[in-house]
Amino acid sequence: MTGSPELGEPALDIDRHLKYWKMCLQAPLPIHYLSNDGNRMALAYFIINSIAILSPPSASTQHHPVSPDSSTNTTPQQQHTTPQRKPLIPPEDRSKLRRWVLSHQQPGGGFASTPTLLFPMKKGHETDTEEEDREGAGSAGLANLPATLFALQLLALLADEHNEAGAFAGVDRVQTLRWLRRLQREDGSFGEVLKQMPGVGWFIGGGYDMRYCYIAASIRWMLRGDVSEGEPGWVEDFDTEALAKYILRSQTYDGGFAGSSAEEPHAGYAYCAIGALSLLDRPLYNSTAAHPSAVLHSGIRNMPGLIHWLASRQFVYLEPPALDEEEEGEEEDNFLLPQRLADLTLSEDYRHVACNGRCNKVADTCYTWWVGAALANLGQKHLLDWRSSRRFLLEKMAHRIGGFGKHAGDPPDVYHACFGLTALAVMGEPGLSEVDSALAVPVRTVRVIEKARAASVERAMDERRRLVTGALEMGLAMRGTKPAWLSAVGG
Image 1 (cartoon, helix red, strand yellow):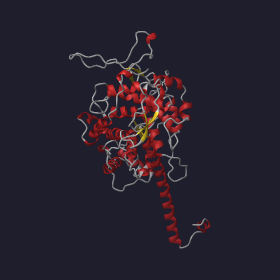
Image 2: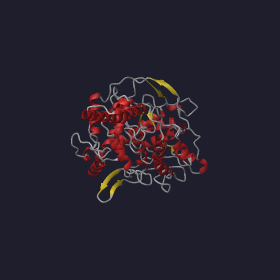
Image 3: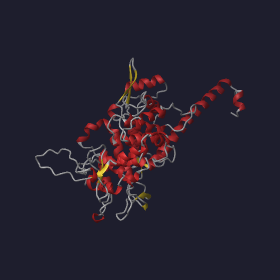
Image 4: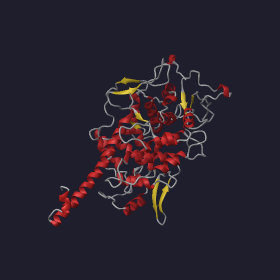
């Protein structure tokens, strides 16, 4: 599929989109968001992440979309200088937002999704024993898996540029990893919430959802690090092999991924399955989304089928038919459906190409991200028609006030507006930050996460050294002389 050069290429109005996100950040969200009051951490992630994508460093190397006269469907790298803009979130506001995120941390581990679900912790309270862990988790039971991932991403996105290693300062790494491990079921899958039930034990709430598997793998990569058993900062890992097996069993007959092999495949689930598998053996430093993952590339039994299924999610976008005033606005087919199988061809020139999440469904902004990022994670980004997909997003889904709607003509919402931007960033849109297709944040934020994880582990080691030194000093004060073994080692 090639473009239509005579119509020109649309431009992304970054200033207009920044104005939209500034409004979302500083003013109350519209009344339609009241039903999402319990997901404030997610809303904050969509807003802050989008601002970060729209605010790359003043001079950086970005990818340009392919030029109209190019004969290929790839995106060459070119040098692009981003104009200097005043930071939309000043340092003092970043600090306030970080404190807001940290205030949602629960004593039993994890983060709550909204201030209305916070555990009434006493100032300075810390849990040191397994019994206190149970009490905190049982009393609160309000931390959930998605909110915890969003909280960690927000802390990295809002990190002080002069102290990026301190991004996770205040995060109870050990308690969060313990809580995460308890969320895993015997079959390897993960639930969303944890509750201590009298006479029953730990109850794992939430459905069997591939999104939870992806989130668990993401949190593990962001916090755990490479710490050997017995070393300071070590926490028992969850069963990564069981998680991988659960995911791999969920591949369907046609190559896609679903909640189980007997269910309908979905592009969002495919993205989560691919992302989770790749994160299980992703390097800890200077990592990339499309690293040569052995778990991913050797574990999936039908890789050609998966790639074909993902590539088949793109289709030629057609204008929906006009409706009379008396007709109800029901969802209409907006994809090219040939009369005969022999007519199914993509050899013609089409201006707009969209993606759907399932077979025979209509176009939706976010699926350009789920499909495109999934292919990027597999090293198959070239299989998506980026140029025609870019036109679809900018000419059909972008709103005149900024942001993106779910369908053409819809008002913008923070979910689709965020993933419209991440899709463009993965395409290499000039003026946008480079986005990591596995973690859905700018690559520079991934580097912050790597520094913050290392600093968290180092703090645990320093704490162990401090405790050991304190115990030795106390012993010396009581005995009055050094033990023979301490003198022997030069202490």
